[in-house]
Amino acid sequence: MNADELAANERLTDFRVHDLNETPVLPFDDGAYETVICTVSVEYLIHPFEV
Image 1 (cartoon, rainbow, N blue to C red):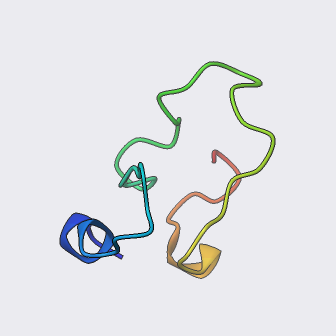
Image 2 (cartoon, helix red, strand yellow):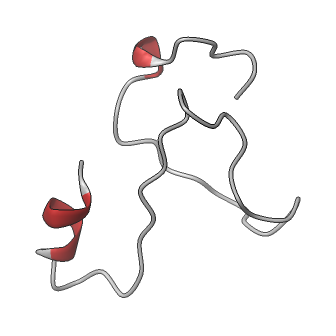
Image 3 (cartoon, rainbow, N blue to C red):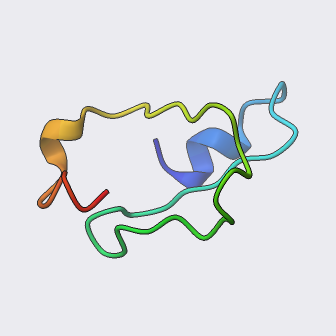
């Protein structure tokens, strides 16, 4: 999903779009979240073990 699609969802209060192929590290401190939902399959990751 892209930012436009997520912004159109009125139920969301916050969202992030991050290209894990470009930057395999998320910009959050360790332990910042208990759960992360990946809406697209991991088979699109170039280096899945780095993520």
